[in-house]
Amino acid sequence: IKGDIGPPGIPGIKGEPGESISAPKVIISPTSELTVNESNTAVFFCSVTGNPVAQLSWIKVNGSLPINRTKVSSGGLLQIKDVRLEDAGKYRCLARNILGSDENVATLIVQSKLQN
Image (spheres, rainbow, N blue to C red):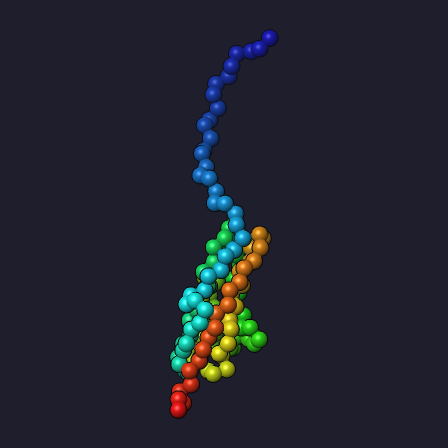
């Protein structure tokens, strides 16, 4: 024997659908290469899509980032002040989350002040 139906419960909160999860995808701007005159400032920006949010890092291919002249932000900005000839080369932005990783490379070209 069934009893009487009780009072209705408190209505629940309707959640918005979550963002779908995805591996990171890296885009660097300016794309492929940047030419900067010696002693000026070089700026690359690495934008990343993906969910969960990816961890970003910048590295110089076959070298290391210039100490004391480099600023790297968690938002993907790479800034090299007082650019020198030895700073020329390829710079890699690497993004990684639990679903995978992606990277992209940009080239820095440094023009010498002493042009013939």
